[in-house]
Image (cartoon, rainbow, N blue to C red; front, side, top):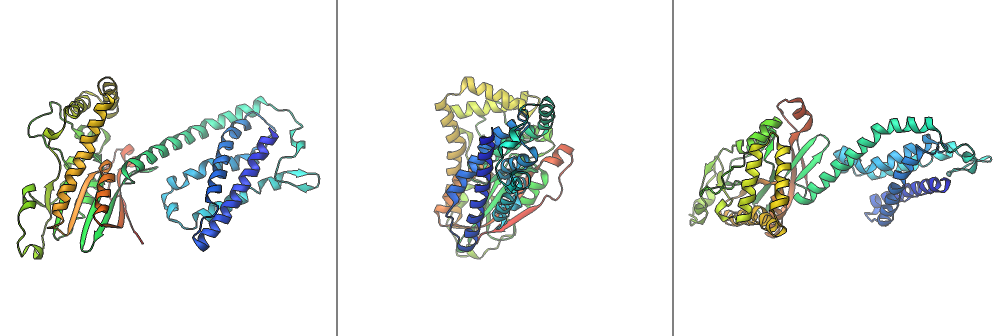
Length: 418
C-alpha cells in the first residue's frame, strides 16, 4: 500500500511540474513540447486517484489531510471548464492550475519526515499502526455518500455534453445551468450566412431573441419545417404537449416578421434593380422537404414517434416507449434509411436553396435543428465562407424551469474570431 500511495504522490508532482514548464513555454513561444507527456501523466494520476480514494476508507494509516486534497484536485480538475465555461477563455488558466498542482504536491513536505529531513513520499514509520479501523471506514463511507454521487453526476453530464458537441459540431452545449445553443456568422466578401442551432422546445425568450435579431436589408430566412401535403402521417408529432409539461415553448410558436415566398421565386430572373432594393422585412422560405419525399421506414418511425408522444403521460415515457418499439421493429438497415432521410436529405435540400439564394440576398439566416448544423456548416465552408463570429443563447434554463417560472432576459454572449 505504501508503494502505491508513493507512486501516486510522485506522479502527481511530476504531472504538476511538467504542466508548469509546458504552460510557460506555450505562453512564451506558442510551442507545446510536453503536451503528450502531460496527457500521459494526467491520465495516470486520475487512474491512480480513483482506487486510492477507495483505499483511504480502508487503510487508516494513509493521512487523509494529505491525499484527499490531491485526489479531489485530480478528479475535479477535468470538470472545471465545464462547471465554469469562462475559464476556458482565460489564457493563463492552464498556468494557474499547474501552479496550484505544484503547491498541492508540496503538502507531503509539511507532514512527512524521515529522520530529521522532510520528504515527499510516505516513510515506513507511518505504516507501523493497525491497517483497519471500523470507525474510520464508517465515517469515510458516510462522507462518500455525498461525494461519489456528485462525481457520478458530473461524469454523466460531461459525457452527454461531449456527445452533443460531437453530434452537433458544438452548436449545442450542455452546461450546469442549462442547455445552450450557438449561432455562427460566416462571411464571404459582402455576403453573410448565419447558422443558428435550434431545438424543438425551449424558453420563450430564447425564440424571441432570435426572432428580434433580424435587421433590415436583403435577407432571406431559410426556415425548417417538414410539410405533409399528402397526409402521410396518421399521428402528428406535437412538441407543444412536451413543451407544456416542461413549462417551455415549442419552436413552432416562434414567429419571424417577414414576407413568405415560394421556392420558385428563387428561379426568377434577376432585374437590374434587385441589388438596390433594401427590404424592410426579410423574405421567408420553407426550405425543407415534404413527407412524400421520405421512404417507408422513415414514415413508419415518424408515425410511431407521434403515436407514443400522444399516448404517454410524459416525454420521458414517450421516448422509452418509442425506444422499446424501435428495438422490435427497426433493423440496422432501416435505421440508416431513417437517419439519411431525416438528416442528410433535408440538409442537402436547404443547401440547394442556399446556393440559389446567395445570388439574390446579402444575408441568409438558417435556423435549423442543431443536429443538422454539422453538415450544413461544412457545405457553407466549402463555398468559401469564413467564420467571423459566435453567439450563444440559453435555450433551457434548468433553475428557472424547475422553479416553474417564465424565463426573462437570458444572457447572450458574443465572441469574435481573430
